[in-house]
Amino acid sequence: MIEFFRKLFGKPKKPIESIQTAPLSEEQLEAVTSEMYKFDPPQLIVGSGQSVGKQREHNEDCLFCLNVMLSGNGDSLPFGIFIVADGMGGHQHGEIASGVAVRAMSNYLVRKLYLPYFSLHPETQNEPLQEILQAGVREAQQAVMKLAPGGGTTLTAAFILGEQVNLAHVGDSRAYFIFPDGRMQAVTRDHSLVRRLQELGQITEKEASVHPQRNVLYRAIGQGEPFDSDVNTYLLPHPGFLLLCTDGLWGVISEMEIFDIVTSAPNPSAACHALVQAANDAGGPDNISVILIQYPT
Image (tube, rainbow, N blue to C red; front, side, top):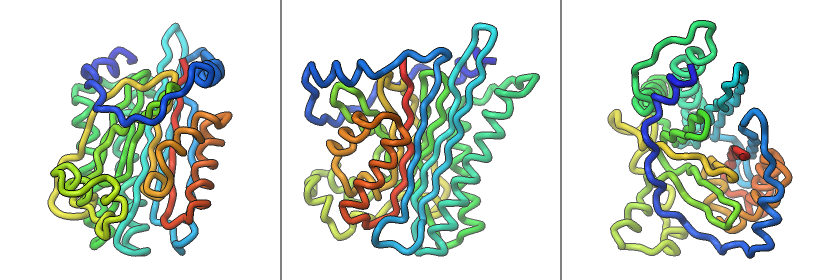
């Protein structure tokens, strides 16, 4: 059963270029890593947080967390499905679109991955894992087109088994790896107009942050023709964290502040609530959703 899932994961791709923050001193690094305990069996420690923000009347974000452990007979692998989505198109369309997309994606992944894995008679699954995630995104696309016409949403989903994570991504919600040595690495690419202009060298990062069209997406669930999402496989940082969040977090507080909050909090749940509070303290201009996953060594 476990070997079957290991075969589904191809060789993880090399991490994309890291986004550097200021490194910790040797004393700070020792203090952080000394708090990383060894867990037996290996397990995911998960927290989440959400807020409507300070300037919105409705929450158009949606998140999903499924964290499971099966251990016995010398075998144990953490298993998790985590999704964040940020709806667009006004209260009715945005709220419906994000909820429909998350439900469609999570339902598909549960049926294809969770139920076969934990059944009494595990099924043989020959379909590559990345194709399963792509199909899940297409399920979400079709569901939004049918049930929330005119609406749209971002979607960033993570499937974790053992030390590997597969990410499926559409839009400008983000996934980050956070390392205790001071690094934050973005492992998703924004499908936004300003990101494309940055890549073409037409605007700077500073200009992008205040651009009047900074929220315009060229790819989103429920918008345009069917498409494939960005799907990539990585090794989870351990010690370290995987952070999924909507732009109500990353667009409001800096990566340095995110790093400081995550690495100083006693656990992922406390970190998530502190991140939400920090975004609200900075004005809370948008809905905020965050999921933080830690895989201790």
